Length: 497
Image 1 (cartoon, rainbow, N blue to C red):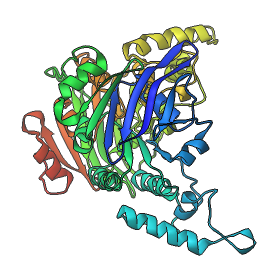
Image 2: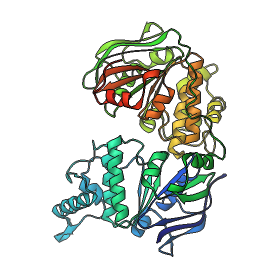
Image 3: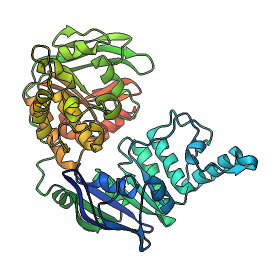
Image 4: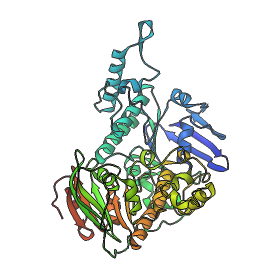
């Protein structure tokens, strides 16, 4: 039975047509996958279902009846809940307070009944099959636990439709499995789930049907068991995608990045590594192994307690990012919103932040110079926006990631550190990013790539360095690197290479 239907829904933002006559039906008891390139219209569709944007044309129907959503409150009242990639809880409130915000159970004199609120919160998590302390503050919860709080919130107001927008982007393998178990339980209870993801293996593992969007249109809907990854990719991009991992044979030059005995209390200990010119070295390991912390210390964002970092034989000052940039070091961080972008600024301003000094003439930097400089890498990475003056906060998550990449690649670094470079990026652009990394290595750039995706690690790296609990435990050459070898080392069961 179709619970929620979009019928010929269209939406435009100025000159950009985000959705074009989209037809989609979500069935009770079914997880429905939605895939498409960044800018295909997925996020706009999600925001219309959330009540954040009104449709320009077309209709929404719930149980066959017309549904008008004037805002998010209307969507919640209709039984539609949206779980975003980055949950937005109130950090200083408890789990229970977040779940029942503005709907707290009351007792006499309209006072909040805290005991009833805690009891109902416990019941909700019992239904989800996961333990959670109702009094625990939201601050400090992992992304996975924050998403579970959002799902519990949806259950609290009897949501019949659950929309999940890239919910697994920041989750580890066990956390993904726990989330999937929760989603399957919701479907068994009769909920309809729309699951938006770039990860095909998750679509096929969870969803019964899958729809593809391209350029604002819904181009196909099929049973997941009747389509292949190659078919989905062709429909998404409208063309054959080049080889996903176009790794050329490395011509290794002299060492450009040398890290010797680097330690930071509570994060990592005694890390030593070398990356040569023309080499792509992957830093692998489980979430929490200390990979990102090492990258931040190498670049100077965080100070280290012991050890040294050298670029082309010259020692960098501890905690000095300006010196790192001047030496030719660049860092594409894992958290694009908090560490990679200034969300209030334009696409052009963000894309040129790291090289503004080189664009100025007689001490003056014009908007035209920013736009021209941003255009080259913006076009190369196919950043989809209304123009260079659009606020980067208005872009989809994948396009925000492309702006971060453009910002650092435009500095023409000698050593490039990329932390989860393709997280949240569609399959077509992912292949392009891989091609760019291979091309940069071919031009003599030393690339240190941190990735949680094993196919990416094995497909792109000349060597794989593996971390476990803050220590570097293995150095595996490309010829010997395999999923089992890397995972054994990452879980503390492999020997050093």
